[in-house]
Length: 125
Image 1 (spheres, rainbow, N blue to C red):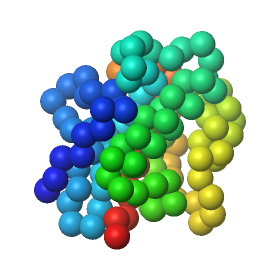
Image 2: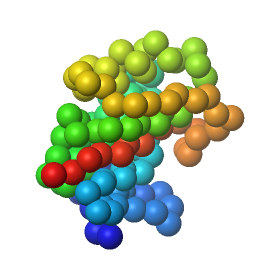
Image 3: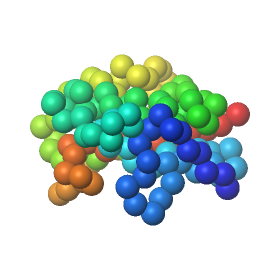
Image 4: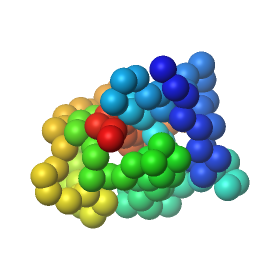
């Protein structure tokens, strides 16, 4: 296994890696809307929050030498399904067909009380 660490994505807030390569798969840990430059949460609205999450994922993908086109699976965690449409719009703007497999679930709470967290699995090579 190989640790992937991007200085352009926020450092983990617990005992986990930003991402791990295992074989030909890259597993990116759930990303929240922490701005890696100043360490602050982006919380002005769900669109800005989701954009920061996707930018954090993008930074990790670039560090791993890949991109959004290689994502095969995503998981989206939402504090409320009321944000589904807005998150879906931002999320979809980063991807192209064929879209990855995905589930979206509402949860009781997320780290740092954020509204959205997204993790991805990427096929490398």
